[in-house]
Image (tube, rainbow, N blue to C red):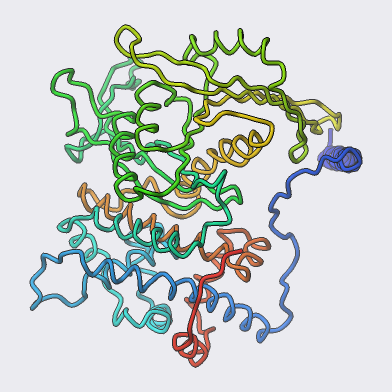
Length: 509
């Protein structure tokens, strides 16, 4: 088959699939099924016809980003000033707050490494624009200076700065519209940050993996890795706010059993920190299939947290046995609805007694909900195929027809948001898996600065003006657009200075 014939065949297949998708959407719309809108980057040419139009668009985008900066920075810098600086005050050139602000901005502009930040952010035009946007930056420091500072300060206080910033937004009710059943949804998930064949810090975790030698033999060798448990606010509008990070450490080994630190141990530490910082905040934790266990349920109840926890088919067999028996007797606990382009069927069993611990003396009352859904898609042959899925959760609240949609679709289903957020930090410019330093404390410091930079970008992308640009260019395209603007002679200095002098307020979409 010639190349021309092959291209023609593929073109015809695309046309057939588009026609089939159009007919399917029309039929779904007639049946009351509306697929959720998906973000698609524009495939058109430039929207600006002249240089003046482009300059105006770049100016407005940076001004909108600056509104977010000037809303966040006063709280941020005030807290960063409290971190003790061990350096000799007579010999320092840059204040610690300036160094950490520079570190945050390197992640805001998505610099891939310390070397790239040194190379790009010290260019004359970039420096001039940074000083214009951030008068605190009297000069742009070297990344090695920041690295030395992070290695010698209590970097956990950088994370405290992030938490205090979020507390500031909560007090000002910035997230009040996005609550689920009057609770703040917090998703918690663990992920690997980096892996090496050499132990570069005693805090690294260790595992043994197979390795194939050049002669074909397979050997077992140690591997060292860094693992982090992350907690994010996961709001149903798609906004995911970084909250806290808990690093697993090889120094946390249990001397009695010689077991390494694990995600469940880290969860207890992280939960305690969240409780200490938000003692009165109504919280709903969203957890994956690792967490359905008596101690986790007991901890959540002790902290007065609501929870929605994934219940896998092979987890808690005694609970599943009760569910299968009681759901036949509770036939009224059924609810069907359309959600997007999916037809959902919920069934639930309330007031189950789960026993655990020595001789099953401990008990927890839980509620289990199962969601079965089906939807239609177009396959590669332009045929309509039916897809199905099934989800189950343990709930702290009794289920009913009035709350099952909010708890499951708006709450539990958005646990995936933290996985998407981690994927963004790993693959979309934030260099999550790059350590930035071989000093353990400095590495953690860079991680917390990265989370602060990500938070600033999330808030900016949710403002009305920048959200429009993000829909056209994509999130990475928006950041690249602002970064390129700061690298060139596009900005009107007088307008920027007027904006600094004006009163600014953060308004989210």
